[in-house]
Amino acid sequence: MNKGLIIQTRPGVGDLCMFLPYIQQIKEHNKDFEFTLITKKRTSAKQILKYDPS
Image 1 (spheres, rainbow, N blue to C red):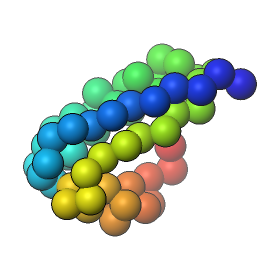
Image 2 (image 1 turned 90 degrees about the vertical axis):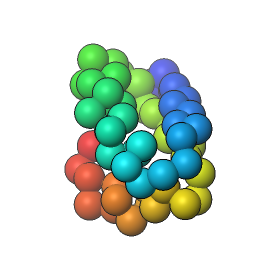
Image 3 (image 1 turned 90 degrees about the horizontal axis):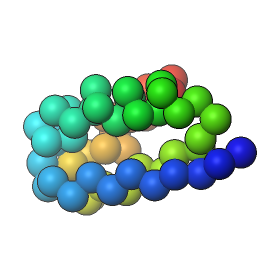
Image 4 (image 1 turned 135 degrees about the vertical axis):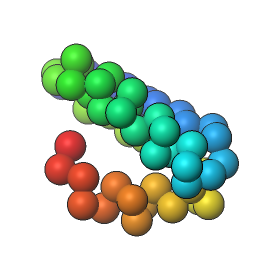
């Protein structure tokens, strides 16, 4: 399995929500990749993505 890294440098929750569809499209078009998403703590990504099945 190939691996990829996505770094989301914007600081806010809204920024994460705005870029989430793009991140999901990257994952959808690269199904053989395992992605790691790096965000800033204050985006609350851990809470937002906790229930995301992808």
